Image (cartoon, rainbow, N blue to C red; front, side, top):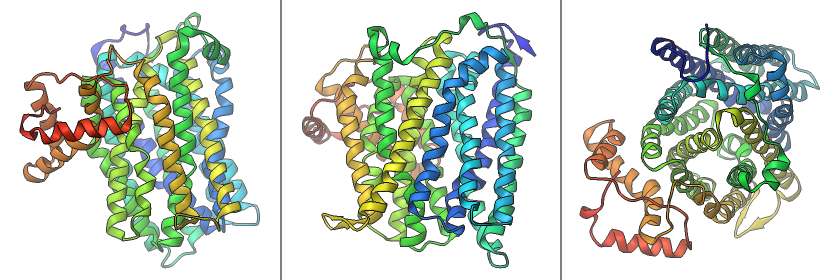
Amino acid sequence: MENGEDGRLSYEERKKSMSNSVADGMGYSIMSGFGDAYLPAAAIALGAGNFYLGLLSALPQLVGAVLQFFTLNILRFAKDRKLIVMAGALLQSLCWLPIIALLLWPGELSAGLVLVFFSLGSGISLMINPIWSSWITDIVPENDRPGFFANRNRLMQLVLFASTFATGIILQQLQLGLPATVAFAAVFAIPFLARLSTVLFHFRTSNVRYDLQLIREIRLKHLFLLPAHRNELWFLVFIAMMNFAVQFASPFFTPYMLNELHFDLGMLGIMTALSVLAKIVSYPYWGKAIDRFGNQPVLIATAFATPLVPLIWLLSRDTLMIGLFQVFSGFVWAGFDLSSFNSALSLVGRELRPSFISKYNMFAGVFNAAGAVAGGLFLASFGWLGLFGVGGILLVFMISGFMRLAAVLLFSPKLSSAGRGVENTTDQRAMVLNLVAVYPTQGAVHHALGGWDFTKKIVAKGATRGEHALKTGLGATGELLKDEQRKLSSGMSKKKRL
C-alpha cells in the first residue's frame, strides 16, 4: 500500500510495517550468521592467506562506498524506495549462488571469485541502505526510534547468536564426512534463502510516498566548506577514523583464533556467539541510555571503551579469558553501533537523510577498506616485527587499540559540541565513565542475583530517583579518572543510578 509522507500512515499500517521491518532484520541476521560470519573460514579452506582476508573485509566496503555515488540517481530514476530495496535484497541473495558453486567445484580462481561475488552482494546492500534508512524513518515516529531500533537490533542479534552458534556446530559435524569446501557450500544455501525471504517482508511493508522534490543533496564540498554542516563533518570524519582503526585489526580475529589459538569451527562459533549474546543483553541498556541522555554521550562513552577491545587480547590466550573478551566486545559495540546509527539519522532532516546516509556509508566504507588493506599489508611486510614483546597479529591488535584511542581523544570535543545543550563540567564528565563501567557492573551483579532484567531495573531506579545531570565533552583523561575515583570513594550508596 502506498501512503502519504511521514505521519500519514494509520496506526495499524505503521505497526504492521514495523513488524515486517523487524522480520526482515531477522532474515538478514540469519544470512549473516550462516554466511558472512563464516566466509573468512571458508576462504581459509580455499587456501587464502592473511592479506586475502584483509581484502575480504576491505573490498565489500569499498564497493559499497563507490556505489553510494549512484544511490540518489537510482532513487530519482526508479522513484520508489520500496522497489529499490526489494531489488537490492534480491540481487544480494542471488550473489550467494555462485559462491556456493565455487565451493563445490573449487579451482585456482575460486578464492578470488568468492571475493568478487561476496563484495558485489555486500556492496549492493550498502548502496540501498540510505534508501532503506530514509524509508524506515518515515515509518517509525522519531520519539520511538531509539526504542524501536534497540529492540530490532536486540532481536537481530538474538537470531545472529543462534545462527552463528548453530553454524559452527553444523560445520563441525559436516566436516566429519565431507570436504571442508563442500560443508561450507551446504551451509551457504541458508544465507541465500534467508536473504531471499527479506524480499517478501519488504513487499509487505507500507510504501510511504516520498516526494522527489524533497531530495536535497549534501555534497562533499558542502560538508567541508559550509559552517552549517560542521557538526555533520566532524561526525563523519570521526566515524571514518574509527572505522580505519577498527578494520586495521578486525579481519584477523578469525585467523588468530583458528591458526594461532587452534580453535576448531565449533569453538569459533561459540566465541563469535558470545559477542552476539552480549549485544543482545546490552541493547536495552543502551537504548534506555540514549532515550535519556541522547546519542552523543553514549557515542563518546562507548568510543572511549573501544580501544580496550583489541588490547585485552594481548593479556591471555586462555579460552575462558577469550570468551570474556568477546563478551566485553559485544557490550561495547552494541552501544557504539546503536548510538552512531541514531546519530546519523538525527543529525539531518528528512529531505537530506538519503544523501547524508550515503555519505555516512561512503566515509565508513572507504576507511573500512583502507584500514583492512593497511592491516593486511602491515602483516605481510612487518609480520616479523616485535614491539614491547608483541608481534604478528597481536601487534596489529595493539596498533589498532592505540589508533582508536587517538581518534576518540581528538574528536570527542567536536562530537560534544553537537550535543543537546551539554556543558563541559567535571561532575557531568564522570557520567561517561559511569555509562561503561559503574552502572553496567552494578547491573550485572543485580542481574546475577535477581534475574535477566537487570537493565530494566537499573533504568527504572534511575527514573524514580530523579534525572542525574549529564553533560559531555571529555577533558583530560587523567582529570576524568581522578574525579571519578573521588566520586566513587565519597560513597557508592549515594550515587544516582540510571
